[in-house]
Structures are given as C-alpha cells and as structure tokens.
Amino acid sequence: MNNKKLVSKDGAYIQDHLEPIDKLMVTQSTVQITIDIVAEYAKKQTGNHLKSIEMERDALWKTLVILNKYEGYFENPDNKTIKALSKPKENWLDVAERPKCHRMSTLLIEYLSNQMNEWSNEFPERSESLQSDAKVLWKALLVLNKAKRNFKGLNDKYIKSLTDKAAAQGL
Image 1 (cartoon, rainbow, N blue to C red):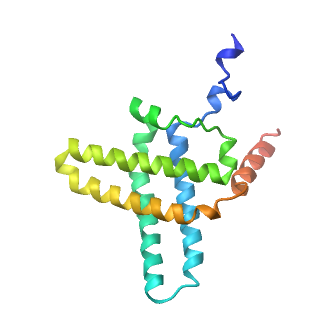
Image 2 (image 1 turned 90 degrees about the horizontal axis):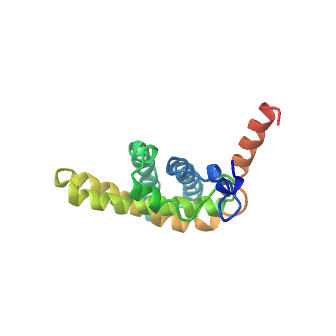
C-alpha cells in the first residue's frame, strides 16, 4: 500500500484526525472546564453580579444537556456536518493544547446552533424547542468567549490520560 494515501498535507495520518464525535467529546470537556472556571469566579461575587454568573453557569449546564441530546447526530453525521466540522483538521495531538480545544468547541457549538435554526424552519412543530436550545448555545458561546483567556497552555489532564494509557499498554 502506498503510504502517501495515509498521510495528509500537514503530515498527520488521516486516521489521526478527529471525527465529529471526537470533537463533540472535546466540546463537552471544554464546557465542563468552563463550568469550573465560572464556579470559581462566582465564589468572589455577590449580589446581582453573582446572579448573572449563576445564569451563565446554568446556560453551560443546559449546553451539556443539549450536547448529550445530539450525540447521535455527531456519531452518525451527515455530509454537511462532516464538511463543516472538517476545517480545520484537528488531530489527537491538537487536543493537548487548550486554546485549540477552546476554538474547536466554539466552532462546534456555533455550528450546532446554526443547524438548530435551520431545523426549526424544516420542522415547525419542533421550532420552539429548537430555537430555545439554540439560544442556550449562543449564551454558552458568550460565556466561553469570556473564559477564553483561561484556556492557555497544555491540557494536562488529557496528556496524563494518554500517558497512563500508554503505560498500561506497555508502550
């Protein structure tokens, strides 16, 4: 077999590129990390500002519920989703960098929100529910954007999990 078929332009092996379901899992993890960041920040707040922070955290929790609800959509993506989420082509090593996880997550959430708006036109009977979910996702994007400065450096938990798996397999 010709090795050139296995390697992409950037030198990564094709099978190393993240699939939509992998990007969803990274997004779920990023949202969970953001919930922790917001919770830590909330400890220092009082009054109306605390209420605002609690609403942001609530939007993030609802986002996790929505992402879980649409997991099947990312497990068996249509061609439009594959194409939309294939740029940029992140691979497993990219997940070790927190800024890339953040960027990948915001792109996926934005795509899903836009997709929900399209679905609300296609399925009027579900329009209200879809638009409500899309609004939650847009709120989550605002919170993720606020927390962006906290996504620096390496994703130590991910690197440790890969190292532990490799050690368990004797690599």
